[in-house]
Image (cartoon, rainbow, N blue to C red; front, side):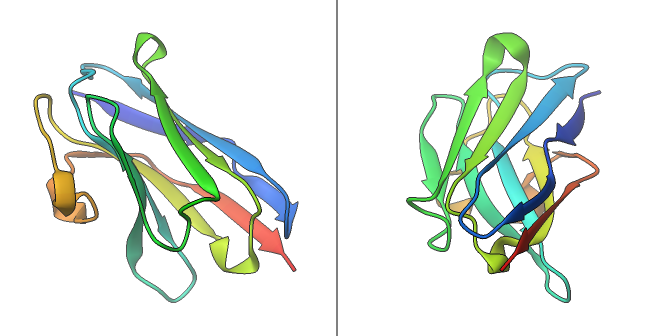
Length: 127
């Protein structure tokens, strides 16, 4: 059974940067699709970025060009480098993973496609 644990959240001023990490334990495979989601106050959970087992990446329009998703399979760790942060990036950020041998493609943003979720880490951006 896989488990995910996020870290790296915190408070930062607009224009600043943060790097989130998500460490996977238990049975996790490099062939999983992994992603970052976020839930802003009063809103639903939305997809931020995803990375397939082959390393291909996808981003939400709102973060493309500012955020970078990456993974280190040897360390079972997923990262989200967040640059040029904006007030509207304030949210709880969650990492998610699928079962092995899963490729989501255009369906990467659908929460129901993921089998494992972390508890979330708070990111607060002050304007």
